[in-house]
Length: 441
Image (cartoon, rainbow, N blue to C red; front, side, top):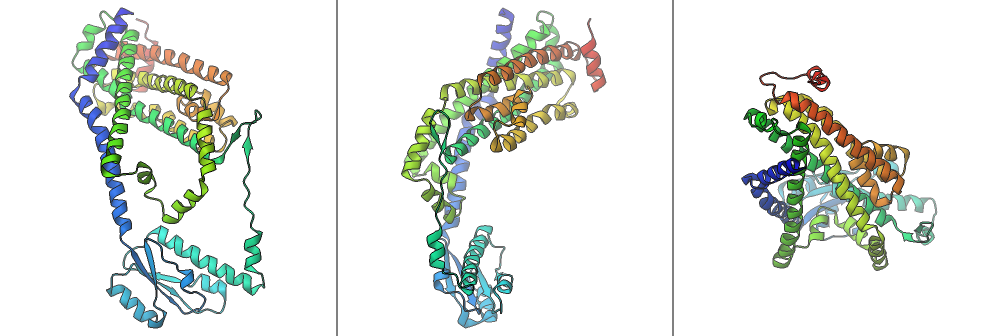
């Protein structure tokens, strides 16, 4: 244990004293917040420019009431100018575009005959907004042709809201389910990024020691299993420290930026949504629903989620780091690692996509449960399932399999390690790795 502690301490200190580690630890949050603020600023500037859209209505169906101005779009009726004159004015002037509504004998033909002219490609949100206005007007006209009273139709619309409860009588909501999905996805993606960043760091550390021949001295007094385990734990500790500092700095910088520059972090997250969607979202989340969300968040097993997050975060990282370390021991440079990277990264990416597809639709379905048991995907899929509530026996199975597989992979990687660190100048194959694992000398 004393040797293992020394290796962990050495790896941790070597990592945190590295200049690039220190620079990225303190610069990354600044860059992240700065990029977010820049995107927010550019979006606000883009929205400040009012889009002038003119329309020519030869059908006689539309009026100014059908094209109501918004904060970002203003409409002008150019029907009196005619189609050709309007096109010239738009082409030569500072207009966003021209909507041409021709005269047709039937509403079905009219719906497919409307045209939009602009100098540049229009934004999809603008076109979608125009299509919604036109479809609504044509649908109402069609209903009038059928002799249907629109007022009665509007009066007959009764919104439904299914209340959700569990069998203990606690109330839930669709919004809180969306929040649970978001928490699970963020946890899964964080783990994947953590593995990619720090797993490759373990691999580079092994390659550097191998090429400098330092490892030949180290392995004379330390078992390969201890050396690999020490490297993995040391790098994981440094990585968790960096993530913790990032979280604290991002919170502090965001708070200061909000206070000094008046930047609303919620607005930054919703700046890319169309005005219509924002307004609908604001109306959907009333005071009562917000109170329900807060109550539901407080009822979540926060401590359990945090403990499991740490376990699967570290368990997943250590499992994949053992594979990265084995690859580092098998090759002489990073170029030769490419042939071994796909088998390592494939289950990691698979876990993210399987978790995204299955957990969102059915967090307790057979596929979601199966992949939350498989050790190479369980760190991601189980993290996505945890916010929805997972039974203790499922967690026990998943955690036990992950621990057993981790120890086995460290042992297996150590078998490759003890032979691979002494191999130079040869690009290994999968057949060579198999021979190294079988070697008992």
